[in-house]
Image 1 (spheres, helix red, strand yellow):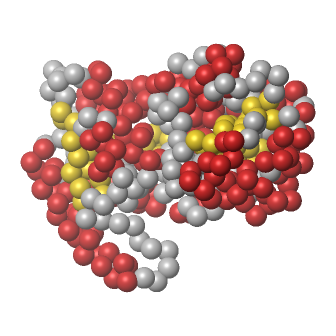
Image 2 (image 1 turned 180 degrees about the vertical axis):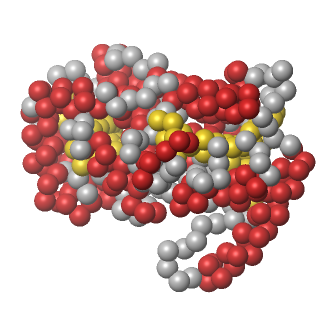
Image 3 (image 1 turned 90 degrees about the vertical axis):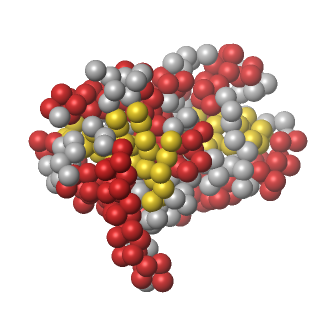
Length: 365
């Protein structure tokens, strides 16, 4: 019996969409005849990313509650009612065996209706501090897969399963092929390499930091692979003329970029943090302060507390960055220590373990 039906719901940001796609791919591998449907927010990036991954998606007219007083909050109740009604219709028509939520406001209405109908349900929480949607759903769902320890503060303990976050398959197969990787980027082998990641759109404050320190990196004998994001590429591409700087809008060969890196500067979104644990390179996290409930700082702190990464908040960059960086780049033992500690936190089997939990729900259904 492989003719199961699954609905996956989540979105708003890549951090909610990519785990859902990874889970879908594993379900498809185990149950080739299964039918899968995604449900997301009709005006967000999942409407593009999910069909690109080969799956059908239905959109809900929903958005998050704004943190400050806003006109958008006045229409929120109407959006919520419309989304609950649409979710009811989707569930009635599609008749899923299990519903899976990966967080973000898009998954709220669908999971709420599914749990009221007693459809087996599982949510996956990527962050060390859960989002509001998953906190609201926790009492009703059957299983909660988490990426960090200590979440019984927010969720019923008997429902929790520590799995880690789903990771892209190409990263799990990452070899430490630094010679080939450096050759791919035409880098010098007698210099340390810094990889700078700000996400696909880019991170303004990180980009400003790199621009401000271009001469400093040269003094430190450091070459830089700088992924500045497509929003900023025109502004910064001129620096590619320099011998020690390469500017990219985005990196197609991510596994090679990781292989070439001696140190990484990254945001601290949940999926980025999980990838860094698998990659196992020394990393300086610069969390985005513009994220709901300051998730990124909490994610990075959870790693820093285990002496597995360096955390510098944006407002401290000017005061702390150069000292922290030069100490790290000149100290082989410190880099090895961070590298070894962060690797211990990697969950390389997360997607399989999450789908194992979904299988258990199928058996009960």
